[in-house]
Amino acid sequence: MFLLVCLTACNFHSEQQAATAAVPTSPAVSSPAEITPASTAPVITSTPDTTIRVKVGAGFTIPLRVSLGSGFSWMLRDSLDAAYVQLVNTLVTTDTAESSARPDVQQFNFRAIKAGHTRLVFIHKRPWKKTASADDETKGYDIIIKP
Image (cartoon, rainbow, N blue to C red; front, top):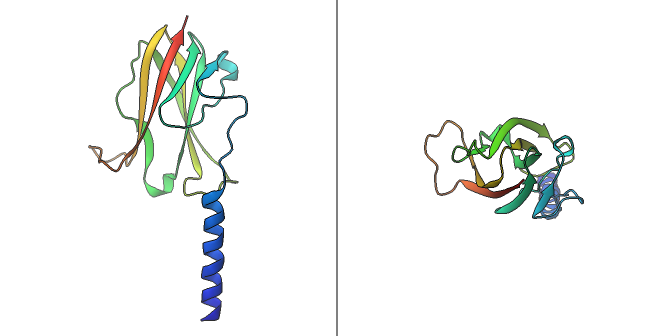
């Protein structure tokens, strides 16, 4: 019984530390972000309603934390406006140093096509569910494309 209490207390302490740990962000990127060459596209921190400023032809990446083992993933809520941005690819990486409930990162890589304004909204849900529920998390990004 004593061993069970000790193990439970240790696990609780490590969960508290993980919950209070700060997620590192790229020091070179701030919001709103100015993004230049596609080959050196910086990573934009995944905060709700971020404005991303980019030049035509430049690439940009939106990383979103996820736990793919739970059955949830990030996806575009609405179809993107292909006149302004092109989805180049998506990648999934695992952050082995991260001890949060979302150790994986889905990276959405885009390229700006023409000058203007568009909005990307991502939803965190189970892909096989046809409709979204009120509990599904969303993150929005305003994309401003300069000539």
